[in-house]
Image (tube, rainbow, N blue to C red; front, side, top):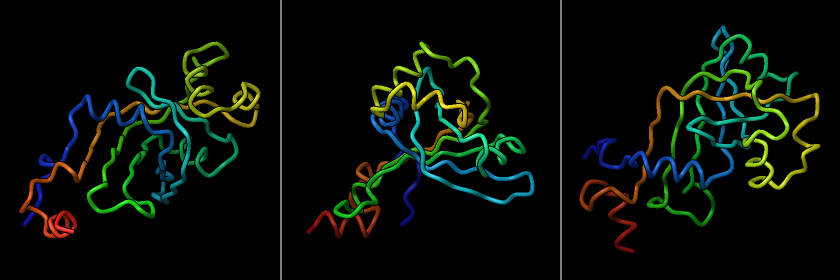
Length: 160
């Protein structure tokens, strides 16, 4: 049987809580010619947007300069010891642009310091800059929401 996305989607409140609870995602970028690149990174969620630190001289930075379209996948249920019913996550797509409003004392700075336990000196190195992902689409999934009888793999795991 086919499991419809709506069957396992998180509510808007669940998505917000899930993003706020997690620390890392995998950011996908592409050059203007379509060359993909994906890397894990830390993020901060603030006022419905995701803030990241980008190395100024990197493939990620050059892609963003050519093409601001990105997707970030924040998920779990794929690590050793986690099972099929533990799979859940969010993919946020949108534009990633410079976040020049983030400066020392900005709320994003304090959130990053608290969540990632780094020093302010770590945040303000000249080799990096703040960028913000402005979402235009959010997709989510939570396999635990799939009702019995719709997914044979999930049913088999639940029976064990």
